[in-house]
Image (cartoon, rainbow, N blue to C red; front, side, top):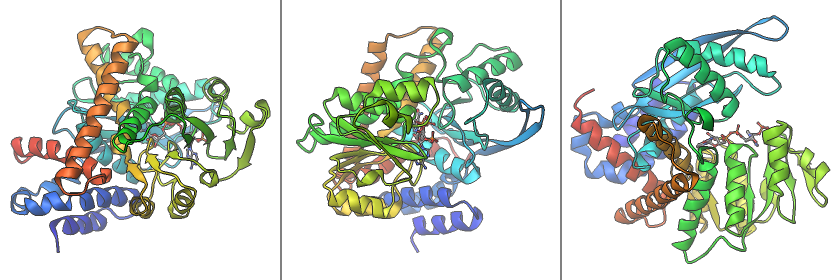
Length: 444
Ligand code: NDP
């Protein structure tokens, strides 16, 4: 049995009931086979893969808080500190009822390679809670965030572990979390990213993940003698990543005809009016359904099925495993040519294999959505220097980072004889740097 298969079996046996984590490990190990096989003796003797798949530390804690009716609520809180070989742990916090250890381990594992690809000194981590901010009052969200941070603040720090936002954690939550950290630790330091602009945040951080997806899509299309201008696109989700992916791809000249939330999707053949989506989602915290009530000619469809609409470019920017085999069969049949993942692991393994086998050019999330964490690292740099860069400076750096990620991913896939297989390229390029650092640092 190959070393990668052995380690995968061990992961499944030792981490029962964690399907998302198994899936993320399988995708990475399968991609790494060529590299591992070529260096098997060296890696085996150091148990590199066994160490890579085991988080350095998982912190799990109780989060008690009081709701508006005076009832005591209890949620689960976690931080997975996965790998610090190339820098302090870095990765978002997710607040969503589905959060559990499996999901956070999959996200933390992916984050190691993504952070490595940015070229910046950041390790991999992820955290969150099964708390659902939807439908909660501001006071309830604050009470939850304060209780969560009271515990988490014991384990993080500007040179130790620097969380950011993810699903359910935006500017409001980061604000409450930061306030409580400062109060508990009496330190004004860059311990969280995604902060407000008047208290240590970086310009363009809000837009960074979505913009980055489109910057790398642009490189990928140029490499195939094509361009974004004039194309029809679908962007799933209507949260932070989706909104700014729509903004940038529209600036590049594409027409976005559909977006969604977890209830249903909107179709606007005239092109999505992003100011209306921003008003509904960023200001009113409403449902995407309301778009069809406000925009002439737009339709709302309850439930799933956004992929039935014809498009050239599909950007899944909602959540894990949102894009399955049946959906991609429809996309391929309708002529979709490009997929770049804004979300983490939104495409199932079978769906990924299907699109790759059917001529769709596919960029995986760990490369495509790395612009968010890269700009978080730029926020950390600005905090350390006590300086703020202009929006143009940050955007230029973000653009440069995404262009470089494309080059690294393209180069690694070509070097191993799998040109255009960007899944393999991203995993190999991310892995090489982390493993060099792990080997240099001894058995730790
Ligand atoms: P948000 O919470 O801002 O938005 C998530 C969006 O996805 C919401 O519109 C949500 O709808 C929708 N959604 C969630 N589940 C489903 C579903 N099953 N079907 C359809 N729509 C769904 O999160 P982000 O935009 O920050 O994150 C989106 C993805 O991008 C996640 O995978 C995240 O890990 C990844 N990511 C985020 C980064 C960031 O900087 N924010 C960085 C890198 C990756 P609803 O409101 O109904 O729940």
